[in-house]
Amino acid sequence: MKVSEIDGYENFTLMLVKFTQPEFMDSIANGQLFMNNIDYFVELENKTKVKGQGDKFDGANVIRHTKFKLIDSETKEVVLEGISPEVIQRDYAISKIPVYCMTAFKGNDFAVVDETSDSYIAKLDISEDVKELMLSTFGSKAVIINPFCFIKSVQKHFDDKQIDFYAQLVEYSDFNLNLEERMLNYQNRNITSIFTKDLFFEHQREFRIALYNTAIEEPLVINLSTFEDSLVSCTDTLSLFNDFEIEIPK
Image 1 (tube, rainbow, N blue to C red):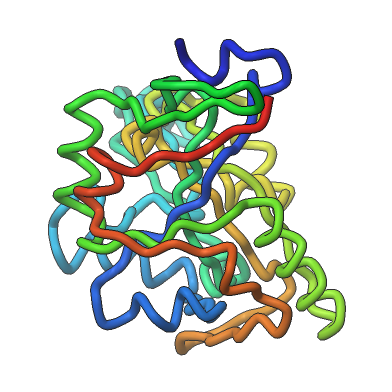
Image 2 (cartoon, rainbow, N blue to C red):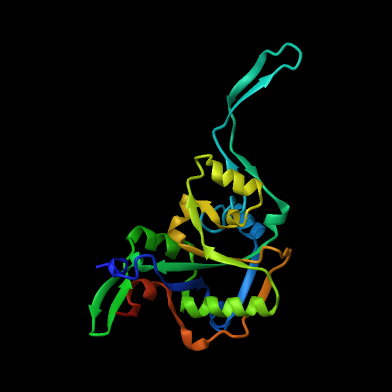
C-alpha cells in the first residue's frame, strides 16, 4: 500500500532531501542554505552538456513550433513562411533571483512495509529508472529534513530579516506545447514562472525557495538562525533509496 492511499496523506509531502557532496553535508545539516541565481543553473547545463545537471530553460519562456510568415511591406506578398525554431526568452530580473532547490518526496513515493498500533512504517518506493536518474545527476549524500519544521524555520528567518521569499513545489509542464497560461505568466512576471519547469525534470520532484525581490551575481549564503539539528538525518543517497524508513502516525 502506498502512503498516499491512507486518509489524510493523499497529497502530503513527507520528506525534504538535499542531495549533495560529502564536503557540504555538515553545513546543510546545520541550516546553511547556499543559494545560486537562476543563471547558474542555465550555465551549468551549457557547461556540462548534461541535461539534468542544470537546466538551460530555467526561468525562461520557451516557445516552439510556431508558424510564421514574412511579408513584403510594399507588395504584400508572402516572401517566406514556415515553422520557427525554438525561441528562448529571458528576463534579466528573473535570471538574477537566488533560489534554493531540494527534493520533496510525497505519499505516493512511499510504500507501507510495516505498522504498529500507532503508526505506519514506510520506505521509498520509486521506479528503478527514476532512481538511476537521481543517482547519476544528484550528489552521493542525502540530508533528510522534516518539511514542516524546515518551512517554519525558513519563514521565521526571512520574516525577521524582512526578506521577501516564495517557497513551493515546482510544477512540470510540457514545453513542446505553447500553453497560454505559461506564456502569460512569464510576460506578466508572475512568480510562478520561477516554479515551472519542463516535464523532462519531473523525476527531480523539486521544492524551491526563491528570494523574488533580491538580485545576486555571486552565490548567497543564508544561515537559518532557528534551524533544529534534531530534525535532520544524513545518509548515503543509495542507502536512502534502499534502506531508509520513516514512521508515520496513524
